[in-house]
Each structure stands twice: as structure tokens, then as C-alpha cells.
Amino acid sequence: MSEQYKALPDLGARSDEITIYAGPCSVESSEQFNEVAACISELGLTWIRGGAFKPRTNPHSFQGLGEEALQIMAEAGERFGLKTLTEVVDSAHCDLVHSYVDGMQIGTRNMANFSLLKNVGKVTAESKKMVLFKRGMAASIDEWLAAADYLTMEGNDNIVLCERGLRTFETATRFTLDISAVPVIHKRCLFPICVDVSHPAGQRDLVPSLARAAVAVGCDSLMIEVHPDPHKALSDGPQQLTCEQFALLVAELRELAACMGKKIV
Ligand code: PEP
Ligand code: MN
Image (cartoon, rainbow, N blue to C red; front, side, top):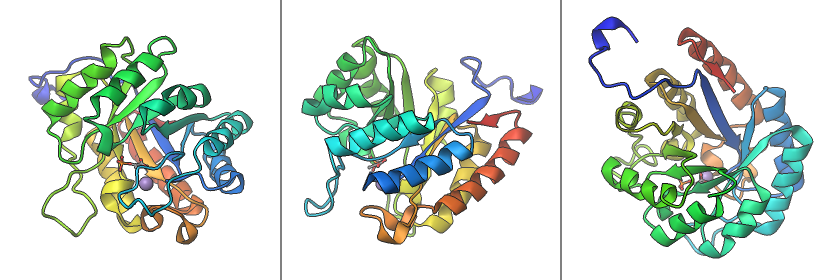
């Protein structure tokens, strides 16, 4: 950081690595998931995401493959040497999800589900598995950080906060990405901050611009949805990148990150 900005509070040394949590919105089959896993591992990345239990706005939409998806994820993680991340939507699934994956995600619709937060905190207290904690789509940063204490008070402070866009009057994008959340979080706490660029975009052609913005603003990690054939996706098809598009974007982001003395993992 250049001298003239040094007056800004800087709570601590940040990692020089930017982690990408990429993968399909939903795990749909082992073929689909393995294809994305192969692409991610060929790119030298470390994590794969995928939805097993899907918190769908419409109860008639695809709800996820449940435990079968967790098995597919664990096998692919093992085979391709990737860490796995999935969302937990129900306290009753905490132990099950925890037993299969390396990181547990709490989605925007559950940010204020305090009993779920306490249960995720409890189940990860010993393992210290990473919890990716998304901001509620209508939550202030104060509310989000206060809710994060429900996780840490159980004994796990391996939390990654994730900005994923807010509900505003704007309809040109799916959600309004609050890019300012990144420097604000860096001033306010030591948790790394991830930017999910897929859910606010809602359309794949906006994803690269938001990803570049997130890297430039200083994010610690990115979430990007990737699907081998987005037109056939069972959820969030319009915003998912193909594996080829994702590979191009990662190459671009690596150049940008290098300008900032960082590397993408
Ligand atoms: C997701 O990451 O698959 C998801 C459902 O995200 P969000 O909770 O941000 O809508
Ligand atoms: Mn999705």
C-alpha cells in the first residue's frame, strides 16, 4: 500500500494468495462434477464447490442430490486432489455434511438462522474446517459480523466472509454487488473476504468484469460458478461459465493478481 494511504487502519498482514472457490451451482452427476474437477485441477487451483442441498426460492425447483452429491464431491476431491466446499441448509445435516467435505458454506438465506450457525460452529469446533459465511442479501455489515460471532463463539474462527450481492431497486443485475464490503471488512476484522461474482451477476457475460473488480479491490478469495454445459444446468444456468471460459478468466486474473504481488490458487 502506498505511503499516502497509510493513515487507513490496517488490521494485519493479508495473504498474498487469492483462493478461487469454483464449481457448479449444483452437483448433478459424477460425470458433470468430475469434468469441472478436472478443469480446476489442471488450472492448478485448490478448491471445488458444489451444491448438494440447494436452498431454492421455488420449492418445485431442483433441490439437490443430497448425500449422493456429497459422495460425488468427496470422490472427486480425492481423485483430483481438491478441497471441497458445499452449503449446509439444515441443522439436521451438519454432521453429515461435515463428514464429507473440507469447507461448509452458509448461504445468504441462512445468515440469520442463528441455530444453524451455532450448530455449524459446534460441528467444526474441533476440526476447524473452514466455514464460508455469506452475507444476507439484505443485511448490513454490522449484522453480518455480529452473526459471525455465533460461529466463532463455539470455538471455530476459521471463517471466510463472502459478499454475494444485495437486494436493491436495481434489476439490471440479479443482485447489487457491494464491492465496498471488501475494504470495509479489511478495516473491521481479520477474517478473509471472498467475493462471489456469479450470484450478483446472474448472467455469465458480467462475471469477468466483476471478478476483475473483486481482485483489484483486494479480495482474499473469489467464488465463481462453472458448469460443463450451462444450458443444461439444473440451477443457475445463465450465470455459470463453461470450463473453457473459466480457464480464460483464470489466466486473466492471474496477470492482474501478479500486478498486485499476489497469486491465484
Ligand atoms: C450458492 O452459492 O450456491 C448459493 C445458493 O448462494 P447464495 O446463498 O449466495 O444465494
Ligand atoms: Mn448458484
